[in-house]
Image (tube, rainbow, N blue to C red; front, side):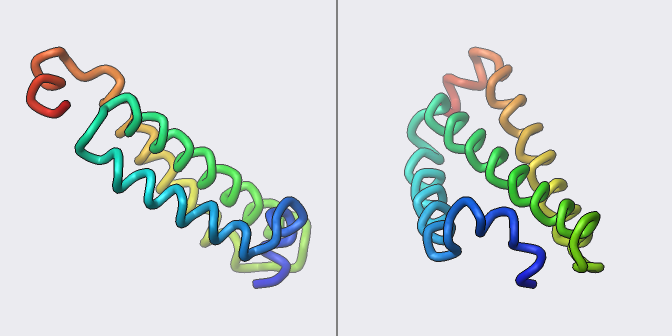
Length: 102
């Protein structure tokens, strides 16, 4: 597992990454039913973090000795892709839908 996290740990220590993920989770919970624009921003950051971590896992699978990191990379990339579709749908929702779900 240590080789799989080499890239992201070079940017921030794991406890700082934990704080980033917790802060993002709180932001997602707080914006879930309040404001579509704030939700879109929080979800976009969520997608970005998943892409960064997927890249880290993919890089460790390709370059370092971490033969199972492709599994975590595909999990993170899949979550990012599905959430990106959700963000796209939220951004392009009709006015009638936005009136029902502000």
